[in-house]
Length: 61
Image (cartoon, rainbow, N blue to C red; front, side):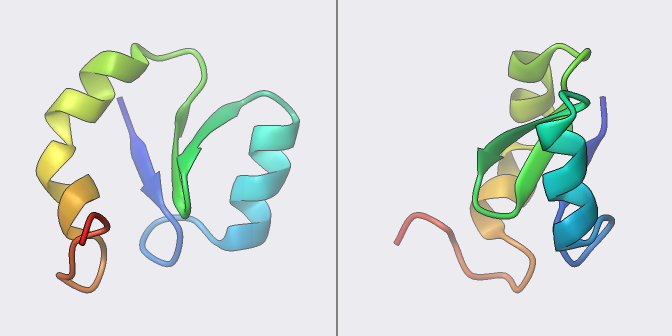
C-alpha cells in the first residue's frame, strides 16, 4: 500500500502521467496512491505523513 509524495519518492511528472493513465489516484496536491490498492487503508496507515507533509509543516493550517 504505497503512498507517493512528490519530491520524496516520485517526481511531479511521473505522478501526473501515472495518474492520467489510471495507475495512481491523485488525493491532493503532491500526494498519490496506487489505484488498485485499498485507498482508505493507505490513508489511515500514512495519516501522520500526509498531515505533516514533506517539510514537517502541516497541509491543514
